[in-house]
Length: 234
Ligand code: ATP
Image (cartoon, rainbow, N blue to C red; front, side, top):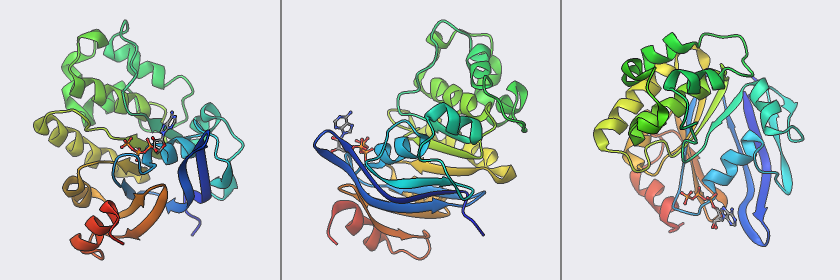
């Protein structure tokens, strides 16, 4: 079976800084792949390369077997790749409902509308007419995820959704993530919290200093192997 999304030999830089070196990975339809690693390991950059928001200096990105490396971010979005970047970036002067509808701008056919989003992210239902500037961090993050769903993606790229949020809010977002995953949606999740990641991931890839140094299922990898890869004792 052709994987849904593939990265082959990705090198990415910021000027002289090497952020990603020779990384290959894939995610299948319906799979949740977690990308773990310390600060600066290159996880966000790799997500940006997959989404078309950062141009790699080498390597290729494939979607259902088609080479999409030359496509811009909005073109990949139209084909079903959607990035929820770190930092949420909502329109502060618009309501929650309006922010969600922004995500439907380049809409593909599919299951998501405002009502379906409010079903899986129930904290949003009473807030639909509220201004985004009045939301807590967790509520803003829920809107950012909901807005991404509104484009009816096949692959959702989530960058540190739980950063800076209270544990109880993170629990709620992770429950939503489980509900979101029905219907074959693939997810690549960047997350600092290893315990949480291991609980939800089908498979994980650990990055260290720009390279993918470990790959496997949570069951096949020992905690020691993961922490060694994470902290560079390999
Ligand atoms: P974090 O969890 O801190 O976001 P990360 O694993 O996502 O870390 P990246 O943000 O991809 O890692 O960073 C990879 C490398 O690229 C780091 O050395 C970082 O300092 C560098 N880097 C990231 N963004 C930029 C930028 N805009 N300009 C210059 N260097 C950058």
